[in-house]
Image 1 (tube, helix red, strand yellow):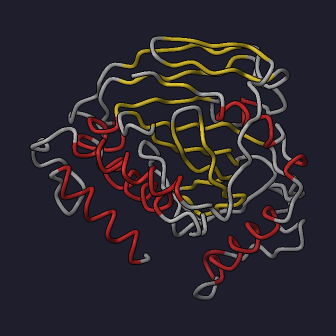
Image 2: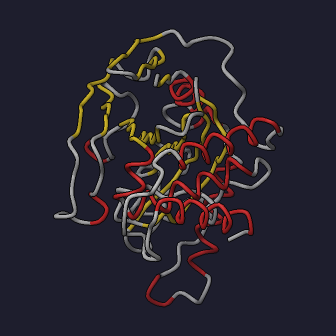
Length: 295
């Protein structure tokens, strides 16, 4: 972990009044502190030209307009037919730690194209109240500082070591590729192609996600998008080494061999044409860039 990431993580955790293990010990004395820190971080982010940033959208994409409560976005033509919003009630400490959350809004994309959803996660966009989520969720108390660190350091790489995890996933992020900074209408974030698992396994054409995390410029809202993609890899469950990257037998793998495998897959995807993914990354980026969250 770099020095900046350590500093931001420590600052946010102290602000939120969290214990070392990430569980909430008491409400923050000033619930506006996270919003102030976020806003300052985003101002620093926009003042310096980032090394990896998706070009800002020059116009709103043509497609299906979606609006619910204080959130709106446009689904580019050909990506999905619409979206179903849901106001999800708060989940207390009577469930698993990764399930803990305040009330939030989730959108499920309908008619999502190009991916067999029977074999993939549902395409969804989540919008959480940032402060409240960080106070009750051990995962959010870690992922928000990780996101903060990337936004505060525009030249820092977005990779497996630096990328924020998904707070409500009971799984580790073992591969990150195509990392880039991406702004939406009133906030900033990072997008990547991710693979999560509970045990070391091969990365094949399916099973990866377009993964975005962002914060509104006022620090009030935390956005997570999980959109399944089919990658240009040729590997399948039956032939996990089809791309010329040897998938080691985990039981007998030498130290570091699994890490080398995941890094090699990430390198392959980093070198791939963004239009070789399904859906194409430009369409997914345009969806994220259209998001507007009003106070």
